[in-house]
Image 1 (cartoon, helix red, strand yellow):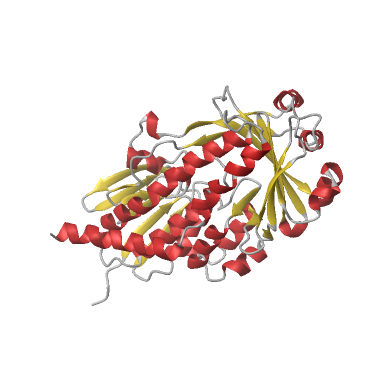
Image 2: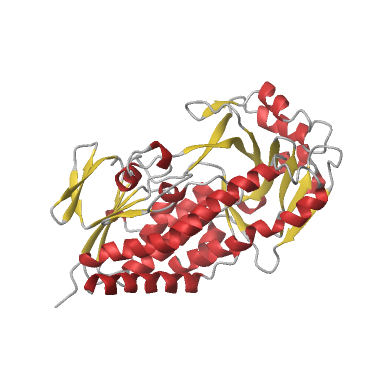
Length: 420
């Protein structure tokens, strides 16, 4: 007899959901549908960084990963250079993280999304389907969409972002488990390469290097994208009064106030000029999921920002989502019946939640250091050199094969316990 098919719905068609769809579409005993609330699958934002571990995880899902990244215009980062941008030591090099042996890449979000969507069959993608409610109907899960359609599945995976409706089903609508301000705001802008170089300075574009500028109350970053045709410029700062709607106008007054101690340094004036030119940019509050008691409930689970939304200070949000997709794809390829879904999701929670929480907490702390708010470190270049580089070690050192094996062993142990 043929193995019965297991019906799986992915809610959310952003980077996390589309990557998961690529992982699951290869599993022959799964019937997969991907639902997106917007009229099309797309990604907002300027760029995404993929560290070496994120690339290794993506390679487990897309064997053509390197080709896809090249098509998306990904730029290898020869190094990440951290420099002081304000204070008496402004312009002082803190450290260089050479990446020649195992470099990360920076890629435009929309371009990466285009390549991740490309392998997916059109018939599994359903746009303009916004989730309204999830109900349990006997052994099945019923999904009610706001357009009036109703579908039934054996499993639901929520990839619907930081304000996930699937998350409410899994952890409950309790304030302590919902997204909240992390204490920072940021603004991002894409600028033509030649223009950025002429304003910021030729010396900062000799290599495709990511620059991070540490200073009092704020942080500035710039890196090269789209085959050296565009530059992403980011300003982030401490936020003490987050607006209710997460955004505020990026005015000259806000930028001058934020960078008041930067203006005599080497970078702030040029960046302010670039950011003010469009005239309509917004500064967005950074939010995060500070506490998540579980990533799964029955045959429903979470991945990506729905599970572990984090601040961007360690460039790991997208990488975490790709790792999630890798683990879920591995586990679901090893189950045989819908009765094993719960064990698969529990094992996924067991191996992924500790890592997600560690990144959330580490990233927030890194942001405080980058903005000169760590009382022990301040803007002391020697202390920064000593303490900053090691903060990425646990992220970069993930052994993806061992991580998959750990998840599989956890699932087998749960299944064995259930039988006993």
